[in-house]
Structures are given as C-alpha cells and as structure tokens.
Amino acid sequence: MQASEPAKRSPWALRLAIAGGVMLLLGVGILSSQSGTIATTMDPREFHHGAYTGEGTFVTGSLDDTCYRFYQTGDASAMNVQLYRVEGSSLVGEALEEQSCLLDFQPMTADNTDLVEVASWTLNASGEHALVVTCEGDCTETTGWLMSINAMQNELFGSTWLMLGISICCLGIMTTPVALIVYFASKPSKAPKVMMVGGDGQLIPLTDLNPDHPTFFTLPPPVNEQPHVAPPFADTVEKQPSDQYVDGLPEVAAGTMLTTEQVYALMRGDVEGAQDRAKTQRTPTGSAEEAVKEAASAAMIASWDEGVPLADSPSTAPSPPSAARTPRPVQTTEPDGKAWKDWDEQ
Image 1 (cartoon, rainbow, N blue to C red):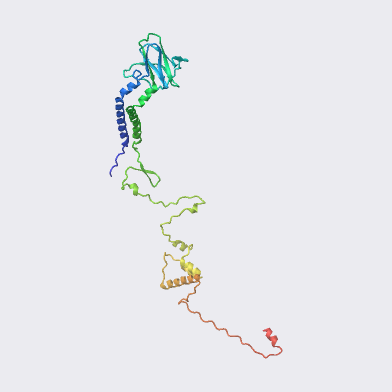
Image 2 (image 1 turned 120 degrees about the horizontal axis):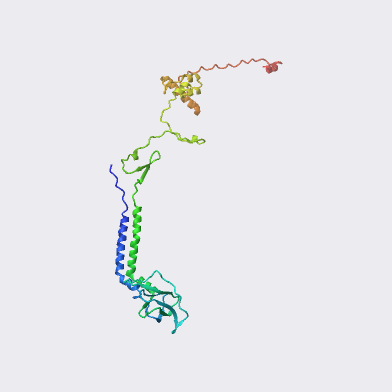
C-alpha cells in the first residue's frame, strides 16, 4: 500500500510575505529619493510665510489659511509673539487668542536643528495681520519664522512621487499580518479529514483512500433481531421473513392443524375420510386412483362455488330409476241420492 503524502501548508502565505517585502523595499526606495522634498517642505527655515528678526511690530500681510505657528531655534533668546488684526495702518482690538491646530504635522529638519514652537493660532477669517515681537533679553540676532501648516500639508500631498512611496510602504506593511493569518490558517491538521460511519455507529478514520481498504467492502453481519417497539405500535413493526421452512407435520399429527385434503373431505361431509388423511410425511403419496378421485373432488367443489353443474363421475354408478307411481283407481258409481254425500266424504 502506497503511503499518502504528508499535508502541506498553503503556498499563499509565503507568496504574500514575499510580495509585502518587495513593496516595502520599493516604497522605502521611493521615499528615500524624495527626502529632499520632505526636508524642504517640513523645515520652517525653508518653507515659511515670513521670517522676523529681533523685537518690533511686523506686518505679515494677508493670512488666508486657518492654522499658523511661529518657530525659533532652541538655543536663541526666548521671544514673546502676539498676533493682531490690521485695518489700514493700525492694529485693531486685542491680540488674538492662541489655539493649537493640526498637531499631526510637526516641523522636521535635515540637520537635526532644535526648533521651538513659540505660538500657534487658528484663524477664522482671512485678512491683514501684524506680529508684535518682544524679548526678555537681547534678541537682535534671533530670528523666528511664521509658518502656515495648511500650506505645508498641501505641499506634501501635492507631491506625486511622495504619495506613491507612502502608499506602497503602507501596502507592504499591511500585507505582513495577512500573510501570517494565511500561514496559521493553513496549518495541516493531524487528525484525518475523511471519516466513515461503521456498522455500530462509530466514526472510522480513513488515512488512505484506496480501493483495497477493507472498510469499503467489509459489511457487518445481518442482524435478525427485530426492534423492540412498545405498545400500542408493537403490531406495526415490519416483520422480516424467516429463511427457515415451516413443516407443520407435528401440528398435523397432534390434531391441531388440518391439511388441505382434510378440509376438502370435511366440505364433502366425509368425516371418516378426513380422520384417515392424517399423514406423517410432508407430501402425501397414494395410488393413481386416489389422485384421480381427489382431483375430481376438487373440480366438483370448484363447480359448486361457480354454480356450474358437472357430469357425473364415471366411477359413480347410476342410481336405479324410481318406480312410476300408478294412479289410484277411481270407482264410478251411478248417481243417486247418496252420491253427493259419498263424494263429500271422500
């Protein structure tokens, strides 16, 4: 018997893992080629709305975005910055309240320069604004940068190659857990996958499906035992016919059962013949004359049932004709006076 091949895992797990690794390497390569664009866009020193040095009031011009931040280097003198609205050539109202916005986007420098966020504003309307910068110490050489976070976001999303590299990297990262799921889901089971139900109702494992397996052809012995059914449905159980031949000779010898010949004899009224027909063999044997008589008797009984008269049996002797009845002599008398009286008395 040839041994079955061992179960193997699905090859798709390895294929997905290889595809994920290739996409991850390709995405990293594209992002590396766009490192200059990333450094330029996310560095406030390179990408900003305006640069301001020292103390004073600086007109920023029209601010059309909603999120702005002011940055300076961490090793310079601390600067205190306030933002005002401008109408004409003068400041209007009080300084705008600072409010954080778009915290997911933070500045990044290629030379690892430490940048400090001085202030952040969320603008509800566009217009002319001005910055008022004050310092606690000497900040004549200190420079700060006002940066639009919305403009930085749009610049990043507008780079086609940069978005392509990010997308490919994300696909490669997401393919890794999918490959792991397929790997563990396709783990071959040690238990046989094909089971058969035996004659006793037990499950039989099949580890080798070939025509020579004895389970396919070995049948349990027939069970002659009838199922037990409780009343009132006990008489509805199907009875299996018995393979044994029922002779009936003991019952006939004991007088508890009649043979066919005895029944025919009783129908003819031959009680003594019915008593003499108790046989001890399965098939009664007799002379040819007896067989002819029995056949004639059976035919006569059948004719009686159908109402058709049959010819007399040749063995039956014809009965002698009955004597003809002679008419009574009638005495004739002459009519006289006593004739009517005598006639009435007769």
